[in-house]
Length: 161
Image (cartoon, rainbow, N blue to C red; front, side):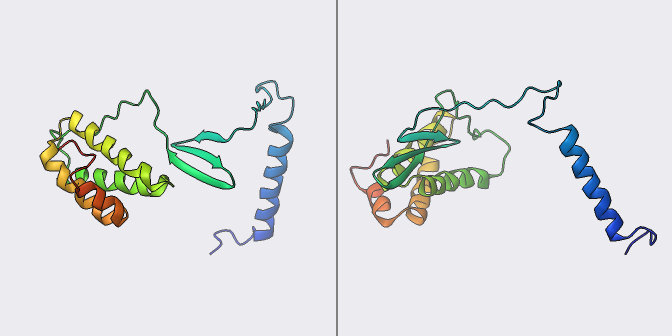
């Protein structure tokens, strides 16, 4: 309901339109506004690979491949087991990591090494390998393809246990 019947929707629209026109004439990004520098664009040569957020995107022939990009300066400070978080947080972190590998790595061969790195980083933060290993195995069996899950359970397993 309109609290002020003397103001119509048409009046509101005109007011809104005036506000847009005012913004466009006085605060344009491309004007010579003395308070702001104009935008400057930097272009680089074309490449077959680029990093975008947490992805490495590569063009191989006519196909686009993606992989997880990790910044070298990232400390990977996962929640330590001594934290007062609920036990489900650790399980969620593990399942999220496996799901992230499945979602972002277009090549199935690169998924399990990423999950292994997550396992080793969590152990480095103080998690017991014997406590989190079954959770990792379960997540791999449920989320990754059956071939990757079989690889994780064989004697040539990439796991350090």
